[in-house]
Amino acid sequence: MPALVPLISSVFQRTGNFINASEAHRGAFICWMSTPIYLFVLLWSTITLILSQHYPSISSDKIVFLLIWSGVVALLYIPLGDYHLSLTDKPKASKRYTIFVLGYYTITTSITCFLLGPLSVFAGLIVMGSPLLGMMLFSIPLVVFYLVIAIVIMSTASLLVQIGWLDYTPIFNGQSNTYMSVSATIGTIYYTFYEVTIMASLIIAWQSREHNVVHLSLTDPLTGVANRRHILELLDQELTQRRRLDNHLGLIMLDIDHFKQINDKYGHQTGDQVLAAAAAALNACLRQNDRIGRYGGEEFLIILPDSSPEDSLRVAERCRREIANLFIPAKPDLSLTASFGVACQRRHDIAYSDLLIQQADDAMYQAKKNGRNRVEIAKPGLAPVKIPSEFFTT
Image (tube, rainbow, N blue to C red; front, top):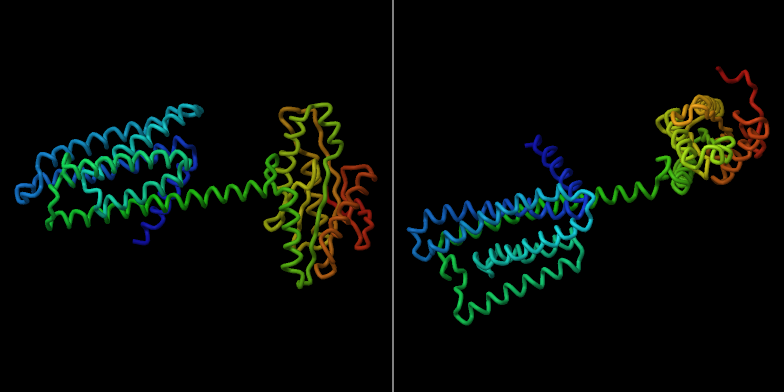
């Protein structure tokens, strides 16, 4: 039994991802999730037809109609669900497809509910669950439109029953028996499981969508690293949550040298490639707990938790060498360098994060002033200190 949990979770996850793909995918989802219902009705109709001779209240002729009806509806749902595969990059066709699917679902479901009994528990679950699920998957006006159509169909059928033109619950001639009660119970259990499955898939789809939205709100879209707001939040968290610790917190501010000239000479598209490549190279140099974010145009901020001044310098130098060795395939003649500023203090000595950022920023500008393509580290008093060249290994 425990082995089924990962399998079920995987199915829900894939279904949730499928629902998130597009409106056409959601239309196909309705088709494929409706097919088992009609296959169930088809199976039940076949069994009932065989047993109808023992229950005079069951109309065998109308059971045959229900059997044919459920089979045809199920068979049409399958190719209709597959049709979404031909709608890639066709938004107008996808919209028409969705409208048709919902129309087909509304009409067939309304007729089926009437055949099985509009006041049965089974029909009640469908009438209650379908609009709710529809509003989770599609636009509310579209769902309300088809809900009105379903109400008109059911109301018209009820009116025809009242004036004697139709039989209530035609399949059973309006009479109840043990077989009907058992069938209704089994059908209700089956449909309840069906709706729980859909709801679980929808919940996973929402969770996945929410995760993607959160990720996008925290990530710089060009470089894939944390954006300015998120990297500053991470820095504040490091200070507020672990300030009582007596270890060091390092911070690196770096700037791509002569980035404006790169844009002017090679174009902004190349400049974007440089930033994306630089972010990837920097990320590869960092330790597991280090965090990197894009602070400004061509500036990056790196947080180094539990990092001594010596460790912070080594990380910065490793990053500097990686940038200097970076190769842009589209522009083989393009050489890159970056200037690095390092600030490192014990946590309880840092009054607020802006002070540490200012130290790293000042150290970075000192690196630029001293010739670029180098690392400088700031003293606690905001002034950067020059690092002897022999400190670094080549």
